[in-house]
Image (cartoon, rainbow, N blue to C red):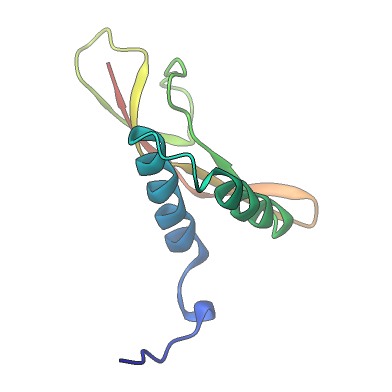
Length: 106
């Protein structure tokens, strides 16, 4: 079966999100055979002007406009799960937020 589509028709953040999921699952399952390939793809995203941030393990700050958080309790402050990474795009030397990270805070 041949699917006719162009990568230019797919928003880059959708591709980055799929890459993030593959990277996350390979780490969770301790699969290291793709590590070099994943690093290469990450490097290519950076060369294209994208900055991908995985805030896992960071302290949550409610003033951080780059995150949408689900707090598990009122005193939650540590990011324990990342559903979507924070994505920035560099244009004319300035980074702009193109996707907020979606996180769970405990």
